[in-house]
Image (cartoon, rainbow, N blue to C red):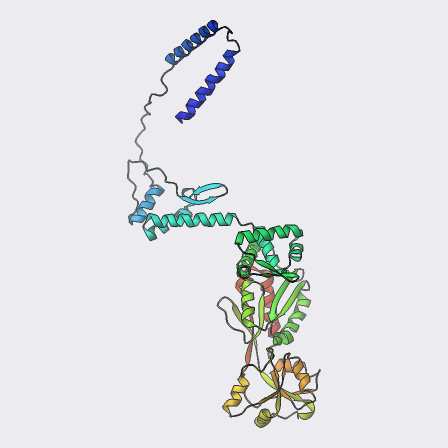
Length: 452
């Protein structure tokens, strides 16, 4: 403060000298006489003015009856030592000690300037460690977090989501209404932000790296919550809503559940598009579901996941099929015929695979079946059985889909084969997504129509 006063006084003196120089005599003697008079006048003015530097006594104040409130510094000290911060009457509270909370593009913010709830969080952390080092660690973490969040542009996350779904820069740009150079620039910024290539060229498109796959789920979930928060009052109307739902289904789901679901969607939500992916690797499908690449899974014999929700649609049982000309309506396959007749087997893996439940049941009776034909598609099984001596064991609803297409007959199996459940698996994203929540309800209603 004293330095600023001196600088201001020098500036005033300099301006006064400039004004005086306009009328200053040009000769040396006259100039010296003018300087002498000006110095004397300045000395007289200083003597007439009171000394501003002398300390002035503050007026006496009436004694206050107010209770002094402990400062933030006192509270933290009391929390660390385990004692309550008692106010001392008659003494003013010490000045507030600024505690750095975060450093951002707008400068440094202090915990004392935060709301009361934030200050309580800082004090609670101090009581846990009871040391200044713990408090410094908390401050350091807050600074790092604030700096990282300040570097994130929400539009970059939208671009990341489009790139993850399209796997192509041009198509991703068209999806979110950007030019191709702008999307390329966004990809460069994403790579710099996450310190990873994220997407690598592969043929005509791009393939995500492991880090991109790991980021897909959290980023997708965050964007869904942001969209839901920005439009919380918009009610979902299936008759007019536009949406694309992506699911994975087993062959059974494709043949039985999806046709019924499609009819319901066309009647109630004609503008919702449904994309069905093959569900051959259940573990990989669950991982895609958790990352947000899929909205739901439909099928049987699906593994559990602690991060997913399982909903049972209905149960399915097994039946046998054989050529219609070789079967009587009242015929029930005998155990010997079941074991001796050649079987047609559906195996999505393209091989005999591991022994199934049926093989285990036959083994308990000392029997073994012969698999004469192994097919990669369940649709081919009824047509392979028709007109031959082959028999096959299929899910009942699948078998009855083909009775009017192939000359086959449905008969009861000679052994009690346990039924299996057809499940709908999804994540908690439906709680913040009205469209997805409606779709899951539509799947459940489709399953209820298929129950016996």
